[in-house]
Image (spheres, rainbow over the protein chains, first blue to last red):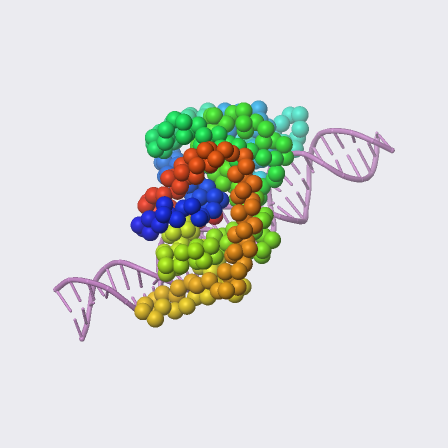
Length: 157
Length: 157
DNA sequence: TTGAGAACATCTTGACTCGGAACTTCTCCA
DNA sequence: TGGAGAAGTTCCGAGTCAAGATGTTCTCAA
């Protein structure tokens, strides 16, 4: 698989979109390998992280999906898995009986914390390739690109 | 769908991987909308672009897939579509009868050029959000992340 | 109060994905 | 020469995805 050599050579003529996707694929692959050790998927970790950190913003499954960039049906099947694993619960909202709020359990919170630490290590290993200044620019640029109110198809992870 | 507001606020605590994927999703969505006007997919355009620009590197389907970050079977179905549309041909290699080299047709080259110009406009519209200096850092960082010889699962687009 | 329409979660369904197996052809060494 | 293993392409099947439909509940205005 040493076919990747030409990339650097002709990177200028390849479109920005591909570059972004390819980088995401590569980084995602490293993260996925790490998170697999904890028995959950990257997407599961993402959901747990959102539920652990920011419970107010995720009052409904629909809002949670929009926030994370996940399709509603994809999110549902992920919540099914997490619920089956005892990492989250869906609690009925007493105020609105349509809503079943996803809530992280203690077990889920614990797993999320461990997995999060492991992922932070992976992230750090990527960081070492860049200067602090470069990381600042990169992060700012990515978050700017990630924002936007236009609806998007599919799931981001 | 104005749920995206919180992103900027709590972006610091979200992991780099998600940010990258979300940015790719957003940018990809804009590119996909544009390319759809030409009746092909983003992935189709990617393949055409590779075949148009760098035919030497793409002598076999396997190499082409590895170069672009596409799964071999995914690439095959994409090549089927492009071939059906008359945009590429698979020509048997006289030297190696296992190989059927994908080659872009004149029609394909023409479409690729038009679509490429349209996508360049989209890319330019993204560029305006950043300074030249920022773009340089961003592009360099992304191409560094995109490189690597470790095998990766799935398809990048 | 009641009816229309929106919001939410879930289900259905058809399409797509992709790892692995199968098949053909090539290479290289004994 | 011939046989083992690698390379290239295609096929297969289990799994995944997501658009739209469904059914329930809520909101708001008449």
